[in-house]
Length: 255
Image (tube, rainbow, N blue to C red; front, top):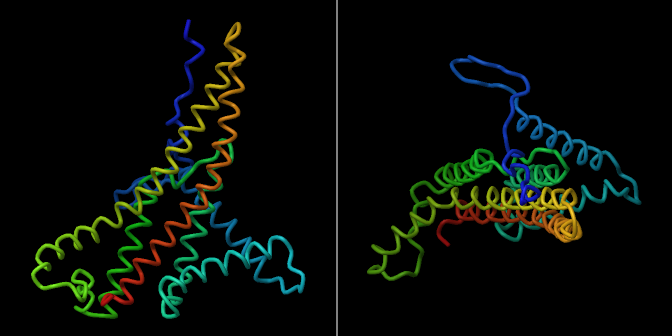
């Protein structure tokens, strides 16, 4: 009697499928997957948008030109306010991260599209890249002075034995929390949307008065979809902002 409650597997949408198999390359499987395809699509759209915006010099900017200019100024302002003028050398890196994550998140909102940022292997790789750059640049710029990051100035010496291990653990946890936050938010949102949409369809196929309940999950799915668009931007922003914060530690470890 409860057969109408059965819904499609919400995890199926995250399945990585191989499109062009490329096997046995030095013992590795380098097949081109749907995840790779959507990442390439995101890069193409980003290059097309900002390439178009950069080639237009009209006094009255078009809509796409305005979007490109606002995106540039938004990220530049974020980098400048977080790391100072010195941090603007990292602007291309932060801008690339922000636009790539935002494009991946928004593409994933298209029905039947693949959300690359809902996979921990993608978000984890981005997080490790960020922390790797922080460590390498911090050591190159400051030498052993980079380790002063774990011993903040002005702290009494007798607190240091307790504070330093806490700071080290906190630093090592950064890539975990950075990657997990983006992954978990995108995964949870898409699972919820899938469940609500499938539940609404199931109720429409039910008999009797149960069919009258179908609009409820449908309306809720629309509301959550609007929220997910906001979450897509916020998660890209948070990832880029935390990247700036971590890069500031590499630039100014004494603080």
